[in-house]
Image (cartoon, rainbow, N blue to C red):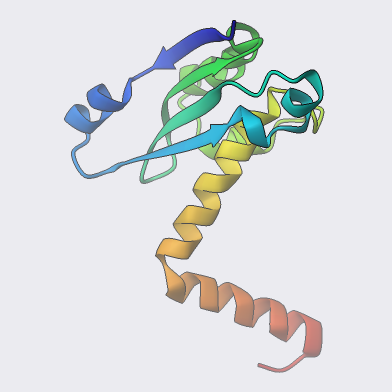
Length: 133
C-alpha cells in the first residue's frame, strides 16, 4: 500500500491564496525505474509552484513517500524555489527522483509556455556551437 504525504499548501489553498499564479506539476510512479523494478508503480508526486518558481506545496502517494517528502518540506521551509529540488543530489533510480522529475517538468513546461525565450536560448547555443547566428 503506498504512503500518502503532504507538505505546504494544497492545490485549492494555493489557488485561493494566489489566483491565476499557480502551476501544478504531476509525475507518476509508473515512469520511475525503481518503481518499475519493484513492481510498485502505483503513485504520484504533485508539486504546487508559484509562477515565480517558489515551491508552495508538495504531495506524494508512493512507496516511501513519507521519507522523501521531507526534501520538499526543507525547500518550502527555506522559502526556496522548485529549482532547488531539481538540483538535489539523489540516486537517479530512487523513488525520491520523482521530486526531481517533477521539478524538471515544471522548468520545461515554463520554457514551452514562452516560445520567445525558448527561441532565444536555442539561438544562444547555436551561436556558441557555430560562432554565428
